[in-house]
Amino acid sequence: MRIAVIDDEKYSRVELIHQIRQLLPQAEIVEAGNGAQAMGLLESESFDILFIDVHLGDMEGTTVAALARRLMPQARIVFATAYSDYAVRAFELQVDDYILKPFDPQRIRQVLDRCVPARSAPAPAPGTGRLAISSNRHTTLLDVSDVTYIETDGSGRGCVLHTLTGEAYNDSTPMSDYESRLADQGFYRTHKTCLVQLKYIQDIFPWNNSSFALRVRGSSTVLPIGRDRVKELRRRLNI
Image (cartoon, rainbow, N blue to C red):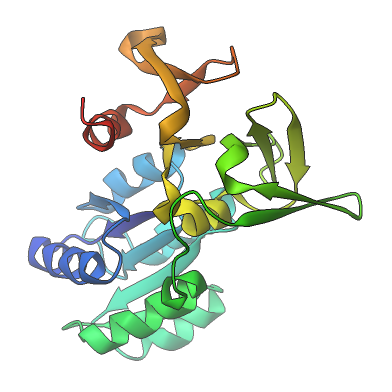
């Protein structure tokens, strides 16, 4: 789960990030302090939820929201504002919700429950459970423990699941859904294009432009690691 908090007021950013971490401790949160930073962030990274302040100093948050909706149609967008009349503007832009400043913890909880339905469901034990993979009206049941990594299918609408046996399964489910469902089962999104089961990482090595990549057991495919995710990956692997 990747979340962006975009607000030109540092105190508001810190407070909102704190409240989100209380409810979603596994989430990866990135922040931007103005509209220009936000636009650059959206053009280089992807997010599941974006909290956007309506007034960003150098531009209107509605401009950022419009770009986010175009680049990430699956993302949930939440306006943050001190003025309740922006609720109408929020729904005109087809954003998913809005929150008022100062932030109410109960309101943040309600918004996250809407944006992350799986948050309130009990998490299965690590490495257990099965996944129903649907493609061309055919459903295949895969054990979670057999999945080595999941990658986007290139169209932006679905995924490809790879297994220990080397087989690959196309699925229409968005990557963000798998990231939420498998966050507590040993999976980590190492790049916007792939979600990896950590126990199957075989090696990590330098790659193009001073970045890093990895391979998983049973596959020779090189999987990229986002520069902003290397540190967290090392922490999770205790290296």
